[in-house]
Image 1: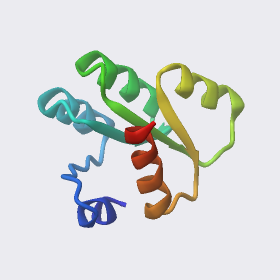
Image 2: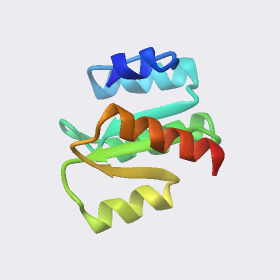
Image 3: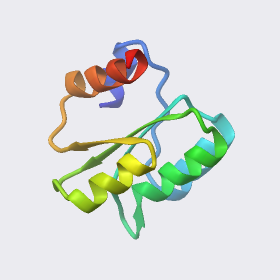
Amino acid sequence: MSRFLSESGFNVVSSSTFEEAKREIAALRPDIVVTDVRLGAFNGLQLVLMARDVRPDVRLVVFSGFDDPVLKEEARRLGARYLVKPVSGHQLLKELRNDVSG
């Protein structure tokens, strides 16, 4: 996914741990945060909250392997798009473009 977004013109920074992602979000104040719901002992919605605090206009996308209505509503309430895996690079790109235009 990182490579696909890079090839699509995005400047991508990937993180392999929750703690690393927290540091990167705080330091870089990204335009977009894409995260999985499951991050080991942590939850991607925690990153969403942190990213919102750091940059209120950040665009957010949360992936999950489950079509969970509770998580979906929580993500929506936090301003994040909720996508059920598998998600293709083209699908993510379409969601990001839709977010920009609408």
